[in-house]
Length: 215
Length: 340
Figure (cartoon, each protein chain N blue to C red):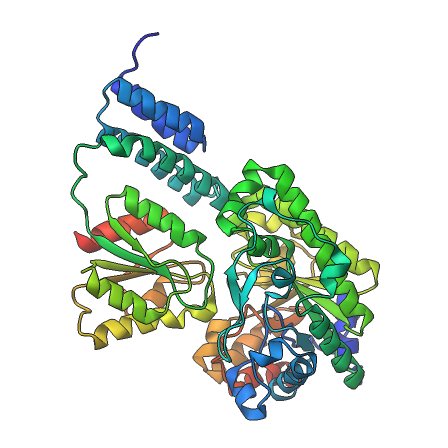
């Protein structure tokens, strides 16, 4: 069998992620390693690229949450193969503290955003779901985070987002930390009203916004 | 026709008969109006009222008396079903609703199927049924609404939700088995409520949205199992309202296939346009709960007037009310409808 070019390896990794195929992604990752594709390139140009394409299909409403979750499983399976072979991890773009605000136990959207942040080169501290506003602030301070990302699916918990901004103000650390918000009921107008720095309509958009915020 | 009781008016709307004006209701369950202000006024409070039938009935009555909503609704959470199916529940506080602490099963394949009749005797089901009985006996003119957590949301409350959603694609056989089982429990629970005096049933299924499932999964699972539960409830003669969360855009075409008697939607949906697109559809909604919480009574009254003018069949909040919402602003909404 003829050797694949590097580009063909990256394409296969990307396609396998996009096709939600965990086994195929693992196989493609092993093949890429055997044929000396740089694992960093395989992650960026292969796995992340597949995830970004999945994110685009999600934006276009061709993929939905179940599809995106399966793509991310495939991506993580590939990542497990490639990660031990990384020479050194690329420079982090910054630290993000992420979580779902108290009163809301939906965390599917947040999980997607976390994955997109991770593949986008951010260090992510995931506080999980149902998180009290004060914990975001405390963690951001301890970890010297650049961004706090808040998500909610429920209108009844939107209050808590404003509380986080207010607590940052009170703790006098507002300047160093950007706050971004998103989730079903959130609008750009709401984000502005509570004094957030950024708003993202979905997971793919969230990474773009985060990059701009720390640029 | 002005002599219509609230119960007659709501039932007539759902039965396609003429009425003097739309009813203004707040179903309970996912969309309950157990606000802090009411509980502080009367002393019948949550979380205790989640557990005791008489207290639940008393709080539901308090809400009705103070808000002006033309129905009485129970329970005040979405965890009754998941609890009897085995999940751990955090019952919350006076101001914060109960939630799932931990789902019982890691995956669809691992769900244990228990006897439905045995489950009806467990958890808080008997207390909810008892509350419905008390309320119905004391309030013959009010529609009593028993609330269910929809099949998709209930399943996602007993199985780790991320796994559950993936398995809708990866393990359709077990996903269908679990949803059949959950739907059977929901029908049996609804049957108990109706046989003990509840007038009708409202189903809230916040996980079953177009944004989460997409059209294919919505059709395969949400439409199918919502209809199974609706048909089951119709089988013992009670009408059914279904609330669909989210923007609706990607799943709108399935609405006429839902066999419920009215569809309730989020604030993001233009109900006037929805009615124009589907003339046979009876719609309920959709006063923004965000607007209600912000507390501008005039704005709420104007918004409510628009909904009435647009011919919305049943006026209701668009989603779950924040427990910090004030009575004044809720009354601005209910009074506007009643004064026509």
